[in-house]
Structures are given as structure tokens and as C-alpha cells.
Amino acid sequence: MTRLLRAPRPVRNPETSDEEGDIPPPRWSLPTRIAFRFFLVYVVLFFLSESRIMYALVGVFGSELPVDAQTRQYHTVRPIVTWVAEHLLHVEAPLIEPVLSGDQAFFWVLALCWFLAALLVTVVWTALDRQRPHHETLFKWFFVVVRMCLAAQLFTFGFAKVFPLQMSLPLTRLVEPFGDFGMQNVLWTQVGSSQPYEILLGCAEVTAGLLLVVPRTALLGALLAAIEMTQVLVLNFTYQVPVKLFTFHLLLLSLILVAPHAMRLAAFFVSDQGVGPVARPQLFRTRRALRLALAGQLLFGGWLAASQVHEDWKRWDVVGTSGPKPPLYGIWNVVKFTSDGQDRPPLTTDVERWNRFIVDTMHPYQPGPVSSQRMDGSIVDYAATFAPAKRAIMLARVGDPAWSGRLTFARPTGDKLTLDGVLGKEKVHIELEKVDIDSFPISRDGTRWVQDMPYAPRLQPR
Image (cartoon, rainbow, N blue to C red; front, side, top):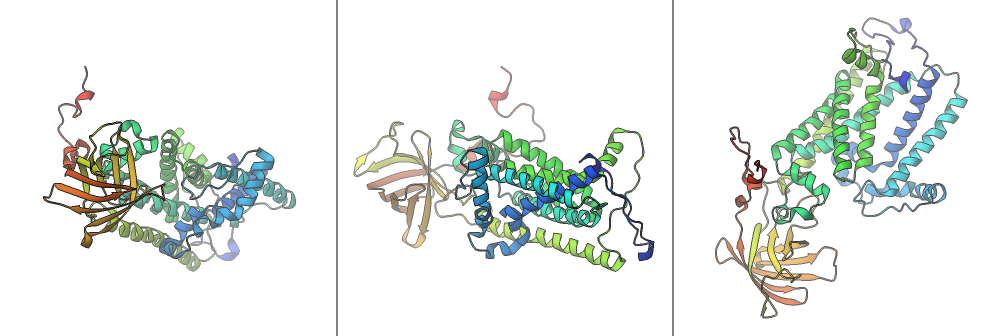
């Protein structure tokens, strides 16, 4: 693909040329044509079989799509993936649903299918179309499509951080032993504990998306996107975030957009030679058509960004830090736990006795707003339904459909709580005291401009 990395040569300047004075595009070398055909087919297959591409492009209409639309494309290609896995690789690659990981064996085999199909189509295409001097028209439109699809993904991930939703700090993280964290939880907690930092990360992604929408600034947007996706890919690999394969393809899209300018960029950053302006291939032949094409790109990009803002703003109103809190919101320490009339002392060997009761807002990666912490420090999550008028809570234990609970609550004072009812098959009476959230240093610390010593004593030299 090295020769494809050359700068696009002038085709015509619509401001100074008429249709009869066009300069014909130069002939592409054979390696350039082969590389372009391969990447064109590969990216098209990626777009057609990856549902996240479609969902980002439909914007606000995504909520109107049927539930199975999120996996319909995967089901369409599943027979092919299964055949390749069984007959070529001799492995099993089932589609595990619900799809919580983009790094299942299924998706790695699917990527291999894209590669093999692109390779086959490229060979046949090259054999049948040996005399074509270039693919200038496909080149122009291909880059427009890649720009818009990449911008849509950057808006999706970026605005989810601008409205700090993607990585938040659940209350359970304040009391859960750090040693119980998975690597992804470590990353999510690190970013989510500082909203300004998460917002800045989102602003960088949104900025790259906005630059990609405008043709004149698309190269700068692609460079910024490539830097960001490289960082995200490294984090995904080192913190076991299961979107490594998808992030790699976003990085690939960024590099494809940068590729035609690679030689000019190398000359600019490495050599002392000057780099002149580049005449970009034009989508149309007349100034009026070009203006309409530019307006269409700007409007579509603006619609993508506005759609994402609309959706994330709605979510922020519901689950954001300033949004409504559920009844009993907070962390409650259990001071007395009675089961079937018998007092259960706080022993670490008691796997069912509660040590804490936690009521939080909904988080994207938590199954429910209510959790309990056992005496050994482990967390149990519940799907919960509140009935404030009846002062009742209905609980369902995630992953255990046979278990259910119903509790009524009373608050003698603002920081006291009693729960009575049934948990599973046991009748319980629980007395609790509310924990001051600001007592956790991670919840109250902000930027300290003057700081004479490390805040955490254990970071001081010994």
C-alpha cells in the first residue's frame, strides 16, 4: 500500500477550469490499485456486518429499531463464521448472547472472513480489470463514507464521556475491596472518579469527529483520531476491555484516511523541505454541485452529532449526578441483622448476612440500582422496583431467577433505616445507619493548586 500513500494529485480546479479543460487523473501503479481494492472490499464488509456502524449512522432513529436489530447482522453472517471456524480453523466460535463482548472468538473469526473475502475479491477484480488506470471516482466516495462512519463512532464514544456516562463511579466501588476489581473496573474507576478528566477525553474524540466532517480539516481529524484510537487500543489490551477488535478497526479507518498524505506528512515532520498545498479530488464537476455536496456533508455530520447529544442528554437527565435519586439513595451500614427471629452477628464466615446496603442510580454497566455487600466484602446486585407510596422494595437477584425479596422500609431519622420483610425464604429485620459519602476521600477530592505533600500518606517516601 506504500504507493497508495502518495498525496492525491490535482484533478481539476472547479474555480478556474471548465469541463472541457479537465486534467485526466494519473495512472495508478499496480500495487496501488491492488491495495485500494483490498481495503475497499475489507472496509465495506466490516461496515455491512458490524451493527455498531449502522446504529451510529441512524442517529435518533436507533431507538425505533427492533430489539433484534442489534444482532441481526451477526446472525446473518453466523453460518459463514461457523463454517470457517469448524472447517478451516477447527475451533468453536459460537455467538454468545447477549453480546457483552466484542472480542468473542466469533468476532475474531468474522474478521478473518472479511480478510479472506477481501483477498479473494481483490484477486478476481485485478484479474478481470487489469487495464483500468485508476479508481479515482471510487477513491473519492470511499473516503467520504469512511470519514462519516468514523466521525459517527467518535461522536458515539465522545459524547458518552462529555456527558460523563460511559465511565462513572458507582457507590459500590467506594466499599468494594480493590483486590476484587477486574482490570476493566480499575480503568473505569480511574476515569470515572474524575469527571473533568472524562469530559476532556470526550472533547478530544468529539473534536476529531467534527474535524472529519469538514473536508478541508479531515486530515487533521484523521490524525487526531489515529492518536486517540491508538491510546484507546493500548488501554483496551492492557486493561482487558472487550472492544479491542472494534477499536483496532476504528484505528484502521483513521490510518486509511491519513494514508494518501503519508509522504507529505513524512516530508513535513522529518525533512527540512517545504510541503505545498494539495489539490483534493472533487466529488463533482461544477461549483454548484460541489457546494451542495459540502452542505450535505456538513448537515449530515451535524445531524449525527446532534442525535448523539440528544440521546446522551436524555440519559444524563435520568442517571446523571444531578438527576433524580431513587428512594433510600446512599450507602447504609448494617448495625443489626435478624433472620427468622435469630440475631446474626457480623461474622465474616456468614455468606448471607448483609454488611452494607447500597442504593444507587442506574449505571450502564450495572445490572440494577440496588446492591448488598456481604461480610466477606463481595457484592450482590439486585434488580429493584420501588413503591414509595407503600414504602416497599421488590428485589430480584441477578443471575438467580428463583430468588426474590420484598422489604418495607421506615426511616425514624434521616440517617437511620429499618428494613422488614422476606429475602429469599428468610424473614428478616435489618437496622442500618447511613454513611456520609463525603467521608470517602475519592468522593470529595478536587484539584489542589497548592499541594505541599502527597495527599495519600502511603505515597510519601519511607
